Length: 268
Image (cartoon, rainbow, N blue to C red):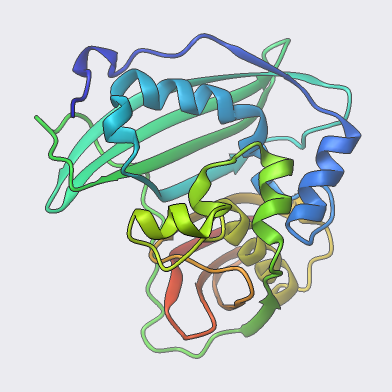
C-alpha cells in the first residue's frame, strides 16, 4: 500500500463536460429534488477528482476509501448547453490515528474561464498509515449552537432504490452502494447511500427550514460524513440559523445515529 508524494500539488489535466437538461433533471430526480441543487457540481468534476485521487493513492489503498468531508462553493449555476472545465489538485495528505486523509481541491469553470464552482473533497483511507503529513485540512465548516433548540427538524424518506437511481445519475457505481454482498465483504451491514445523495437531502431540508424555494439559493454547502445511511431509512435533518443567511445542520438516520455532522449552508 503506498502514496505517491510526488503527485501532491500536481493538478490533473483539464476535464470537459457538457451540461445537459437531461443530466440536470436526472440528478434532481435521483435526489428527490428540483434541478439546480448545489450537489450537482460533483458530476462535471467527478473524473478530475478520481484522477487526482488515483495519482496519489495506489489501487490497494483506494479499496479502503470512504468520503469524509465535502465542501462546495457555487459561484454561478450550471446551465444546460454549457461546456465546463474541471481541474483537481491533491493539496494535503494527513496522518490520522486510524488512517490517512487526502484533501483534493477542485475548480470548475466555463470554457472562457468564468468560475462556476470550487470544492474541497476529503477522502479517508481506513487503516492505511501516511508516510508524512503534507498540507492542511480543508477550510473549517463546524458550528456550535450551545444547546439552543433547532429552527426546524425535517425528515425525508430514503427509497429502497435510491442508490440505484443515484448511481445512474451521478456515474458513481462503487459496489458498496449497489451490492449488499460486496458491502458486507468490506465490513458494512449492507449497501449504503452515497454520501453526496445524503448531502443533497440535507441541503434541501435547509432550504425548507429557511422557507426558500429555489435550490440555486445555496452559495456554500459543506458537511462531514460521520456514519452511513441505508436505503429504506428516514433522514432527519436539524437546522439552526447561525446568523443572517448562514445555517448549521446535522442529519441522522432512522436509528438516531448522526450521518452528517458540522453541516454548514450559506445562502445568497
